[in-house]
Length: 223
Image (tube, rainbow, N blue to C red; front, side):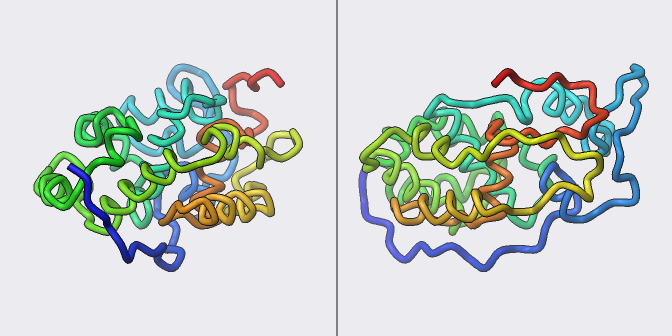
């Protein structure tokens, strides 16, 4: 079912959440250097900031690894928007429910969602029930379909030159000139609910930049 959803505008940039990759950077916690876990491996401190293995697994096997698939990039963009004002761990816990609710993040399917689907999603306790974010996801799915070039090409065209890994969290920016440009490019293409900070979190998560700390055990991805 298709219906126009209008009036979706990105809100002012929210305060950084207290936990999660981008939030951990912005909050400048007392522990800013790599931390050695029970397995003897040094990790970025946010990866060990919660007892649940889901956070360690996400840090070790996913965050910072290059993502070039359209569906996966649409998922990450959506989840970063839903994370605004919340802990990233909250989003990770709900990720399976998000995938079910948004048809595996197939932009072609989500673009066809209408008002009845919005109400259905607002009744889904498995996801973050925020009307503006739900409607923004539908708007963004339609923007994916309307692009004049593939979404991966648009996003990866803003990849900055490779740089040394940061020594501590204090050396990690909350946004960069490239993330400002990416957010501007996405908005120009019809995407909403994305600003420079969200765009930089997307760049971190999808491997456009490598912000694992210098002492973190996770290998650097190849060029």
